[in-house]
Image (cartoon, rainbow, N blue to C red):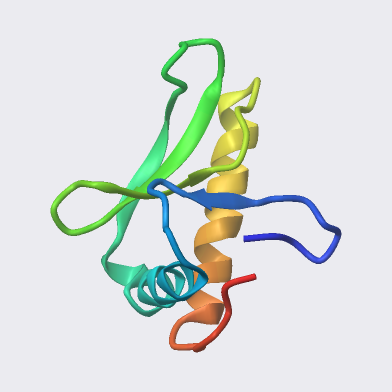
Length: 96
């Protein structure tokens, strides 16, 4: 997902071979936003913070596009992304 200012906000936790798969996965995330769980955690390298959204079986679906130095900044970005997903819920064809 790319913000209006061109900054990458979030990325898929998985890869998609075709654009149509990306589009379908993004639409699914938007439609099921209320069902996704997640939060802030350390990056795998342990040198910062990232946020992650998980599906019903616990697989990572969406992750922050970058690492954050501060937990509070990462948490604020996570909260903003969750609010944005709520606004996009049910919007078809929203994948950039």
